[in-house]
Length: 156
Image 1 (cartoon, rainbow, N blue to C red):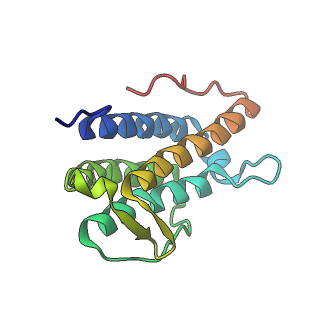
Image 2: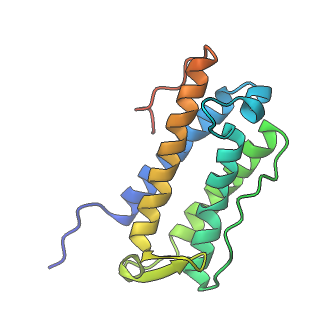
């Protein structure tokens, strides 16, 4: 008999909870600071958002179709509204594509972006960890700007 520690649905719920919190962090930024504010040589948060948008949907498309695409994190946004609109569209696509993955696929290796050879579940954990890492940087930015960031535990 197979036992699960966490279900596929619970993993997706956790991931989308993290994305919801990151969306609130993006929204907390004044537009100019989202694109221009930096500390200690780190990138502006808008550039980090471009990276966060370049990973999940293209990766899930690769997992579900087998088609390998090159990684492209070049920022394509000039306003906070554009970032949030894409974030919301990607949230819906993630739900659809994630649910197309079979349980067996989570244990299969996949060479993502033609470079990163890991099991699909390891890629998914990286996506979540990477987002949390960049959101932490955004928290530092917001605090330096005198803005109280959303509580980190409010992911649902």
